[in-house]
Image (cartoon, rainbow, N blue to C red; front, side):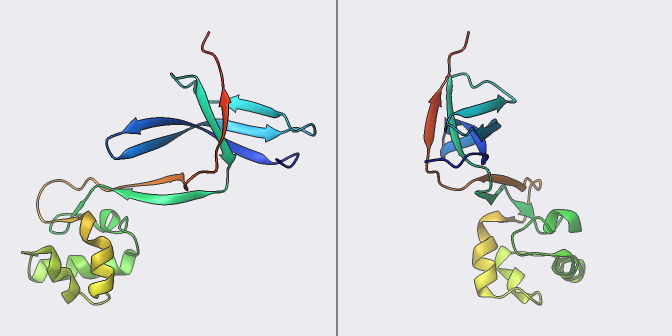
Length: 149
C-alpha cells in the first residue's frame, strides 16, 4: 500500500537495443484514499505509465572519453574521476600521449581495479561522447494505463 502524501515519479518505458529505457514523464502524489494524482510533463505514445518512488535513481554512464583529447571537464565525467585526477591524466598525456588505454594505470591514482571500472568508457581516437544520466534503479512497478485522446 502506498503512503498518503508520498511523492512518486512517473515513467514511460521504451524498448531499445540494450534493453528498456526509462523516460521520466512526470510526478505523482498519493492521496489519503490511496488514489494517485498524476502530473505529466509528456504523454507516452503507448499510453502506459509506470509509477515508482521518486528517490530511487542511479547514475548511468554511456559513451566514451578520448584520453588523448578530452578536456578536464570531460575526464571529470568518468565515474570515480575528479578534477585532480583529470589534471593528472592531462599532465601525463602532455609528456607522453597514450598509445593504449591500459597505460592509464601509469597515472597516479589509477590502479588495475579503477582501470577495469573505466575501461568500457575509454578510447584513444574519435570524439568524446560520454554522457552521465540519472536513471531509475531496477523497478518495483505499479502500472497505470491512460488513453491517448
